Image 1 (cartoon, rainbow, N blue to C red):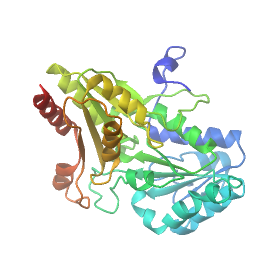
Image 2: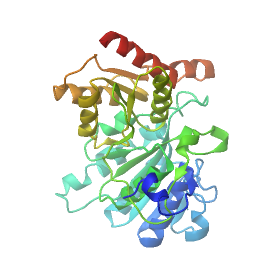
Image 3: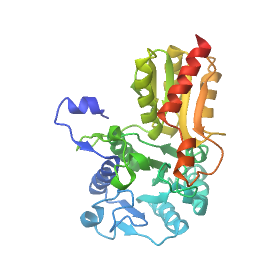
Length: 347
């Protein structure tokens, strides 16, 4: 394990984008373990539409870095079979929105393989996939769908908010004996054509380290309210916390990092201190991550100074028109307004 703070204390900082961090992690694990291979659309020559496999074809050749036809059903099914045979495939589903054509392989095969075999046949595969909107790509290329995967037993689901965590999470995911859905938000990848939140570009050690799957992290301490985010919404929460501090409100920000397993105790511990909870989630509102987190706090009978709240994407397809899309997406101003309203209710 490591953290950006401890790493920079002993060596010069090295700033990476999340895309470069993911590619570096996969390359290092391919050097260490000959059973690791990569498959997907445009992941070889192009290096991945979102830069997750840059340079791997030149280093490892086409036998281990394979471009596939546009058939998610075929290559994700093949990845499940490879994993059952002892390989460790990393397979890219370019957009999470396409899960519908390959979901049987994911939730009926990969997720259940270990259960159905009494642990005799595991499925050590990583399915990495892009999520999120904000760049005018409409309803079939802009969804988050965290809860869709988090709801299914047998799948681990993670999403990093910065490059340090992206590398450590990817190394942990490849080494896990069971399937891991590794989501990355397009707005954090560091791809120039998408724009990038600069805070996501962080130091990451060159060597080997893992970020544990299933562990949340406090990324800003506070006393008045707990704001929980994941992926891009962590940065929206941090921006809001800065705005709120100018008005004397101290917000604690939790980076969830993992949807499944969900680190319920980390959230509960924070809310026990602050007494207020707001969840920021760019997935659909109903039956979502925010609802699960709020339920986890309420079930623990933690005294609250205000009713818990959530900000999420409304239950409609993502609009194409940028004005309409940004109107419904979460952002820092919405977080700030919600926190101020919660503070007024409880003071």
